[in-house]
Length: 219
Image (cartoon, rainbow, N blue to C red; front, side, top):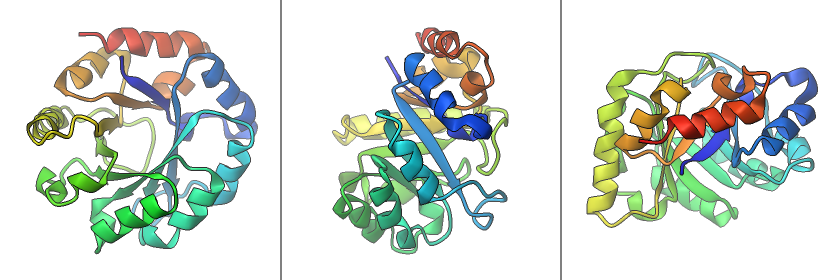
């Protein structure tokens, strides 16, 4: 059974507490928080103050995805704000190993994110250090994009790599265009954490939407 992590990016920002309550009561496992800086990606979202405000009203696991340049400058702030997992993009880190250690030392679980076109070999020397790998199945920056099918073999390749190297404890998360229609293929390829924005927050009945995703993930 995959972990379902609705992405706040697709929520109604005029009433975030009610939005988070709706997915909590609807059976969500995590809350995925996309942090964008308008530099690494062409969009700006929110910062640690918003995460801290949400943390005080939620017991969900906070999955903070830093789509920002120089993430090392902000690890402490997001850890103090209440992040449980912090994902950094390999594409933004000159010293990836050091940033992963920084996340761990701040008391959070470290994760590394890869864009669709970034090869898996960039993970070769850091797998011992991470708790999760996030594979983007859209180009990061905006919600509501369509899933890129070419990433499916990449998910499978990473899952195989983790098994062969005895890293079955590392979570494999996918983010971008996840729907009940493709969730089964994604999980069959090896994913066990599904980030879904529009597929959850775009529906009026959040409980039904999450249930539909879980059912779609069966294979």
